[in-house]
Image 1: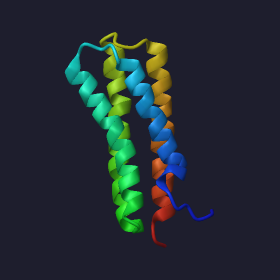
Image 2: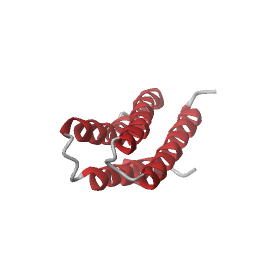
Image 3: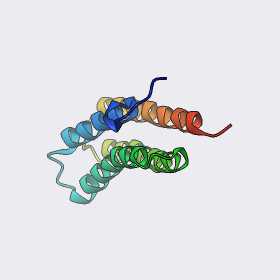
Image 4: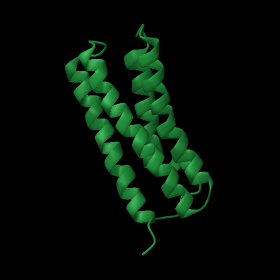
Length: 118
């Protein structure tokens, strides 16, 4: 793998950015402000922690922030179940978003393993 100098070049960050935009789009008209604030906050946390960890320039710190991102991605995935159960989003769209969250979770886990010292 080549050297990456900017967090914007990370596929993980790009996936997180896409997820945040989907969350905002999916729940823009949701009147349940507690729900909407929680899921948008968790989505933002995924993206922010990837960028913050990258900028620390230490693999150990980066892994720590990726772990936080992973927890937030799990939260978003769970929130899509709640959104579906409350009829804030169609079952089909919710399932698609959960699949995207799972891919992000898998990518975060894989990158954390890549950064682990031997």
